[in-house]
Length: 314
Image 1 (tube, rainbow, N blue to C red):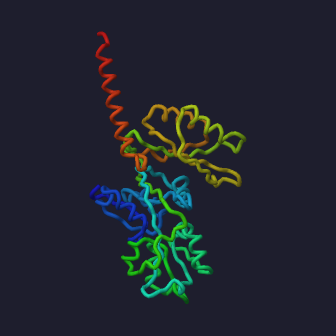
Image 2 (image 1 turned 180 degrees about the vertical axis):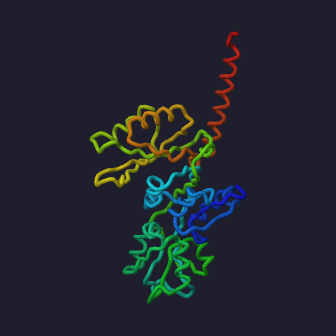
Image 3 (image 1 turned 60 degrees about the vertical axis):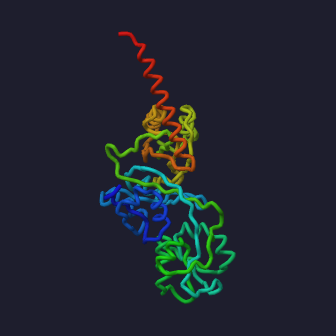
């Protein structure tokens, strides 16, 4: 993707940049540091960047609400792929700062949540200060001027290196296997839905006609009827009134699959609104092997159909 402008949450040294760099084609593009993930999405929709790379979910803190709400209500973009990345939070301090000196911890709110128990146990009474990203937190701590007492940031080892900080305590996340799910998004249009791979996900947002008993069950019943496996179901306030919710649903399959297309037709008919957020290659340790297996099975099935069609009479 040489020449492609890809927005990520900066400044440089963020976990978003680290995760993005695991994707060789994205790393070859022009990387654009931005101040917030909602700004990234807005700039993708406006066309000032070709793609945006944003965090959407964390295994400890759950959904990144600002991103989900922007995808659901504020912008029209398509998910191109998902990337799962293991996050290692570190306590970063200016050189010479001891653990006992720290009176303030600065970081992105989700990162503070991922380390809540460790901070409460090891830095009781420390002030928690929100920053727009973990890398911005490192920049703030390196710059000083945050007030009396010593400040520390929660962030990556890369951010520590960039901003001249020391990693005074590594691995301060509360749970091992701290995974964050990122998605790459682009503006919608012809040719913008990735081709099916045999190991795909689709994401939609379901808006009910009314808050009635059994309305969610009816939605789920359609997926069951078509034997489609859901991988995530989340309710979000519909912003139309207290008690009104919409449902963000990830499920296995691609819009090119007939069974998925039929299910979406039925959902579109029965709901007040159905917003399509994309069909894209699923991440995961075994994803490449599953895709290879699906491709081999498809080629075998195609050869079988070809041989049978040779029997068709003129």
